[in-house]
Amino acid sequence: MQIAPFAIEQFFAEYEFSTPYLLCASDCETMTVAELLRLAEMSLSELGDLRLHYTDSQGSSDLRALIAAQYGAGNGRIEPQSPNALPVTAADIVVLTAPEEGIYLLMRTLLEPGDHVVVLTPAYNSLLNVAEHVSGNVSRWQIQATAVGWQLDLDELDRLLAAGAKLLIVNFPHNPTGLLPGAEEFEAIIALAQKHDVWLFCDEMYRGLELGGRETLPSAVTRYEKAIVLAGLSKVHGLPGLRSGWLVLRDAQLRADFINWKHYTTICPPSPSEFLALAGLRAQAQLTARNRHIIETNLETADSFFARWPGLFTWRRPQAGSVALVELHTPAVTAYCHTLAREAGVLLLPGEYIDYAAQFVRWGFGRVDFAQGLAQYDAYLQQSMPSAANAD
Ligand SMILES: Cc1ncc(COP(=O)(O)O)c(C=O)c1O
Image 1: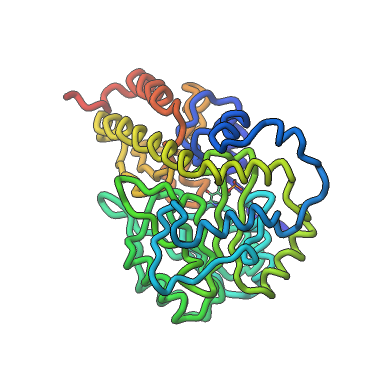
Image 2: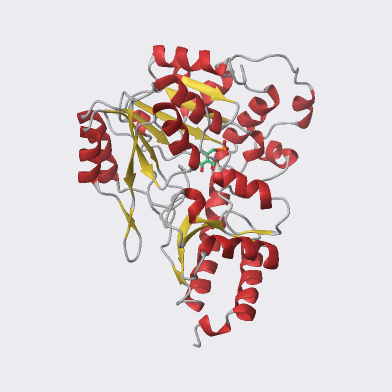
């Protein structure tokens, strides 16, 4: 049975390693193994001593305990705790061999053909496509563009869930718009999931990258019994090469079924990744602060760039995360992005590949060479369309 093309990954496969300036990457700046271990106060010789046996399918107990502690009070990760926060224990965690694996296997585990799924869109391809592939019955809860940002329509969500939904899929902070709901709005979404008794799959891959002093939302898993949370080290920590992530899956039967599915893909996490994931979590405070700082700095650079090209872009500044969806006022945006990559060595992701309106492109702000790439793009624009520049 065919599945829709994973358009984002296909686009990156074509350009990621041949285009010098990635202005649309969703991950943050990475580092070497040695740098990571230094930050985590762990030694390279410990890594050398690691034995490469099979590991616990659910993930090592040390790593799961450290992950579970993220969702408790006083963990240093700004976990806003209300008195009625639901506890998370190591038993609720399943370590993945990649965050992506969690999306694929959860849809396989939870959904049957015909089950109604509501997905927040635009979405990272797999959140939409795998659900569509398995259930064949997906409704889109579309984020609305406003003049200056993005907004959610809760009445629309209520209406969509009322049509007998089994699962609601959301992603906050949101890729690609950079939307972060307010605390009350987030509670209202949880309340709607509760009201309609649906499973809530909350992709929290960018949680911790709140910008402009905004608060981190509580994890959905501490707010709702039927919430299932995806998180990992690819974005916030800048460690995508580890392929490390986890699900928080509280329901024991669902968790057992999920692990059964996992035996058909990767069986267990790679031990070097588990070791380095421990390091990533120990160094979490430094990594998160560093990457938030990189994003904030790059956003300021982007602010002045967009001010210089007012007729060409509509800039909706992200509230959280490492990416934003920017309106680009040129004809044939997808073809434009391919030409830009080939002629200028600058990569922007066309909205069409996120199944979104064709005049949008995704930008990413997590890399240290962002300003250099932007200068390259600016020079290309000055040469190719000088009349679009702001004369001031
Ligand atoms: C929202 C979201 N969820 C999940 C993933 C998957 O993460 P990974 O590529 O590390 O498996 C991504 C990656 O871009 C993402 O943006």
